[in-house]
Image 1: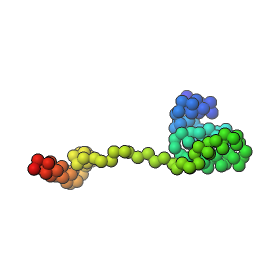
Image 2 (image 1 turned 180 degrees about the horizontal axis):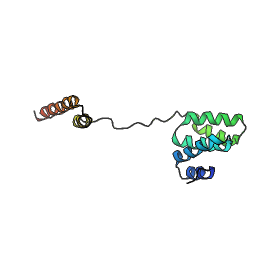
Image 3 (image 1 turned 135 degrees about the vertical axis):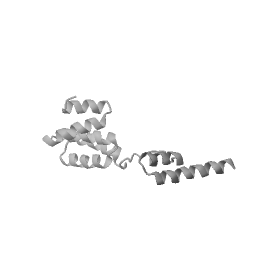
Image 4 (image 1 turned 90 degrees about the vertical axis):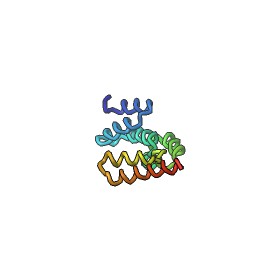
Length: 126
């Protein structure tokens, strides 16, 4: 798709916030249009970058740009912090850890973790 404001709006309507933000940041390099900043706020909110979105909202309010819409967005995000996406399951088994060490060539740690797995299985048998 083209790098235009219309393309960014279409991506926003489709929920493709990252793609929209990429276009908007490219457009922002060439223009100080407040519409670009407004749609950037929406993309940032969609991606969970609330701190940056709030900063842009305050900037737009100072410029008296669509203050009602900006106030609505600020109301939605005022108490939110940036979302940190983390992997939920960080509980790996000994053999999974050992396989990773083996794949990267760290055989000393691989042996250590395989030994832990063997000891765990021995205890399970007893």
